[in-house]
Image (cartoon, rainbow, N blue to C red; front, side, top):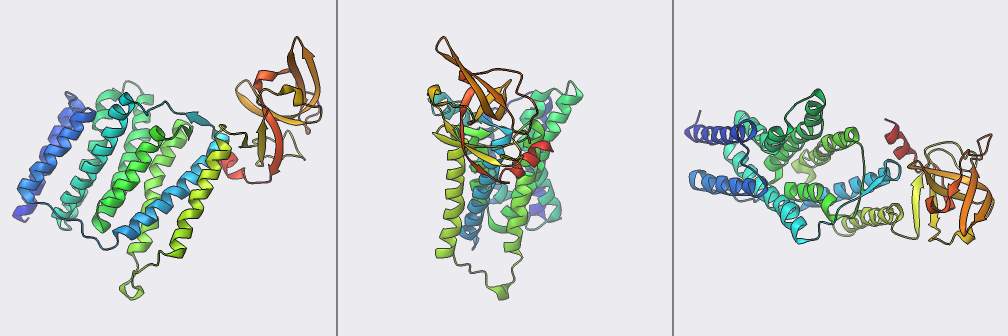
Amino acid sequence: MKRSYKKLLIFQLIMFLILILNSFIHNILGNYSTIIFLVLTTIAFKFIFGIEKDRHRFTKDIIFDVIIFLLTFFLLYYLSGIIIGFARTDNYYNVNGIITFIIPIIITTIVKEFLRYQVIMKSEGSRLLTILTCILFIFLDVTNPIFYNGFASKYDTFIFFALTLLPAISSNIVCSYLTYKVGYKPNILYLLVINLYQYLLPLVPNPNEYLASLVNFLLPILLGFKLSSFFNLTMDEEIERDYNKKGIISLIIPTILVIILVYFTSGYFHYYAVAIASGSMEKVISKGDIVVIEKLDAEYEKLKEGQVIAYTYNGVLVVHRIVRIIKQDGQYYVYTKGDANPNEDNYVVEQDTIMGTVKAVVPYLGLPTVWLNEI
């Protein structure tokens, strides 16, 4: 083994030792402690090994592909939110939110990916050192969760493996691969967007733990497969891709679709869309259709018999037809029935639970989200 390889191996083993102590003996790597640790490690690496500059030729091309990939992901993810539901995030646009969450994520991501690039470049293609680097950065991502999890039950162990370890493994394998192929900048873009969107956007899809685990595990793998086709191009194919008009269009279209989808699914606006998960309104509205709902905005006097309305009952969204309306003491009470149901619903819909009236039906568009929810 080369002398430089031995020095790098010792450097990695020292980092492993620190992370082991942090995971199993005493936790010292909080948000800003992790930043200090990574910065000091990078400085030490510079003095021992020197710094490699990122001079990859096709970095801009890959960054463009990453942007398209992320826009497509958010388009599909927010579409799934029509059926799995949305959650309103806390307001992180304050001093505490920025200092506690946003700034640490930004700095940690940038420094970590820069350090990953330096270690992988100094490995000079050594399979052993590259694998150890990947394991090291996986351990870096899970060191604090290991300490705080406790593993007191099988459920705690499962949650750690499903929500923390498996996503960390897939993310770091793909990021290490991309670092070796095209540098650290595309990784920084991808990780910042994926790690920050839940703090920056006011409304995000609300998957259960199993679906969240699946998404977090598969997403980096799908990105790796998408970009691998770029790396597999031959020199004869001249990797000079034209990102003028076609490139701009391919970027604008998913951006517009994401904005439209967020607009219609957020519930902030006068019209929004939901997917239908049952067949109680066949043949007018089928399972898997999407309905466009117009908010009532407390104008309950607009309700009429025969209208199809959307309301919540026991926390579940229901889309049924009004069969009669009773006004008593200034309050509206509505009786409903699904067109495909033999009997009227055995409950009264109070006005405060009515979300709005159905204005349009889009066939089949909600089927993917219904299937996803039934997995």
